[in-house]
Image (tube, rainbow, N blue to C red):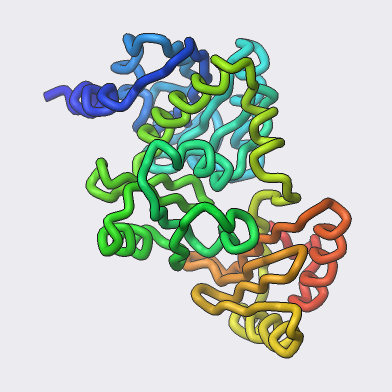
Length: 300
């Protein structure tokens, strides 16, 4: 049986672009190449595939789409082909990282805000979203990081959409599991909508979240739990801040918010921080790093 075709036939049920779309897909020499080849006849969508031949040696770049340099080839191809946007996958296709038409990476929660209206609320996101600060009107349920946690909460709440910062998109229609390609389908539908209005992806991203909110930073530390405790103690007695300990520690202030949590798989602390403007972001990032006792030399 041609399982790639079977999966593609399922995915075709969800395509509904209102305008012609051209996008570059970096398959990362992983599992999604054969599936996208079966999607070549989707009306209104031109997929330009790169690194589409499965190869366990990953000759183009590593299988992690968030690794340094993993989006470079995709960014160049987007510019070369004048594509509307692009995506790079991990090796097995459950993670998808999107780039705009200028070749710039898009925060996964920004993608969530683009596609969420195709689904009924509530939605499930992990703590990295800092949702009370970044998307207070989005009707989300925060959960601990991890596939097990997201899926269980989605099932419990019968949620139709869940998102993790790492590029996992979960769908009730996909047995509550994650599918990077199905995330692409709904992003295609969204980009077609705004393109019909003459709006580029980079423009909508600038308008969507008016915050300074970069991608996650990892820091190597010897005592992760000790650092998290130190952060909590530093902020907990100040009435200007709200503390949450769902996963690591999250701190919410009037003009910024951040989360520090330990990696589940590596000796790292993961920091996510968002602020109302660049100056506040830089000031608070410096402050938080000082409390954590980390510097750029420990970043990875």
